[in-house]
Length: 489
Ligand SMILES: Cc1cc2nc3c(=O)[nH]c(=O)nc-3n(C[C@H](O)[C@H](O)[C@H](O)COP(=O)(O)OP(=O)(O)OC[C@H]3O[C@@H](n4cnc5c(N)ncnc54)[C@H](O)[C@@H]3O)c2cc1C
Image (tube, rainbow, N blue to C red):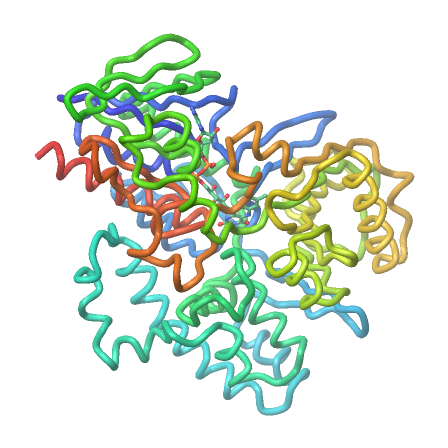
């Protein structure tokens, strides 16, 4: 059986490794960092364990589908809890909007904010269910090499159902008037890396995911999902080379036949490259073998980077729940600072995740584990003074909302920003979430999953199809593996 080299051990690399090993291939995963998981790694320090990246577990069916390919279920590996409430949004004035797990509860929240909105919400979610079914069960599994793959959906009725040509922003405003409901319905697409006005309304399927399918948490954190995929891969013989940076892909007779790494050279019959696409092409492949040039990358719309703080607090903070969105500043102004005129935001929105509300294993008893995230434009100047000034700002905002002191109780602190994304993942401009899912960067318009010149190189991960996020990364690994299997056959 030909062997397969996977570059990168994030969700897409692990997924690709599992699918290739299942067919009996000899698979090795090469990872530059000392631990696996990519952007979803975790670290422990001073009694706290922090997920470094993703914290929202949405679309549980995608995880079930993945494990089902191997006759497994998520619960064979980790305990999944549905969070109730799922999350809360804190506004400048008034009480926070708390989103319960049950639809009945969500209807009550809507009705209390905007009379008559329940009927609209039901219609919105019914349309979301159709989009989810077509989008997440069919379209995302396509390699997107040709528009013909989407022929069914080009029919008028198909396109209308998917709302490909309206924006999320227009679509949401057709249904709801209250700014708080609009913020609730627009926030999930912030994950997709652009303003709601630039994201096709197809992605309102994310609202269906958030509200109808629920917000879940794997006990011990998202890292548990990484560990389970590692266990599954290892059980099928996949080998892991960590602290092993791939520095070059050697090509002979139009085929990749060797990779050079910091631990020496390895012969290979094929490659699925899941590290950041730009880095793989620009730095590991000679110019004549690349799909895209530097100019192409300059023209892409990248999703945001972020400033993150991993914080340990030596007491409990009453008013926080597991997921807290601090929308107590102008969404518009912050979005402009990210997308229109990239600059450090004057008054940022931020997200506070407090998994110790659900999980005792992530913090010492009586303490809180906090993950604070401020989305920012990629490529901003990242220096300690700036990080620190934002730290003070957001802790003050949390103290104000919680009506409690937090700063003197911080016993652990680590920050992470643009420079870390560059150093740890070779991320172009230090992006966190890859490429934005704008209409011009969707499906066939995304960087291709295959190398068009070297037939035994495929790409997977958040910079190619279907896009950013844990479920899409898992799917991306699957599609790339399916294409490589076709190549071998
Ligand atoms: C802060 C943050 C929060 C997020 N929150 C969420 C969330 O709540 N929910 C959600 O669904 N998604 C979330 N995401 C997005 C999600 O985490 C990513 O889309 C997904 O994990 C990407 O997986 P990947 O395999 O494409 O890439 P990565 O995880 O980046 O994996 C690529 C791997 O390749 C390695 N690599 C790169 N170059 C080389 C080389 N030359 N040699 C060897 N190895 C190399 C890197 O070290 C890395 O480990 C978040 C992302 C971030 C950064």
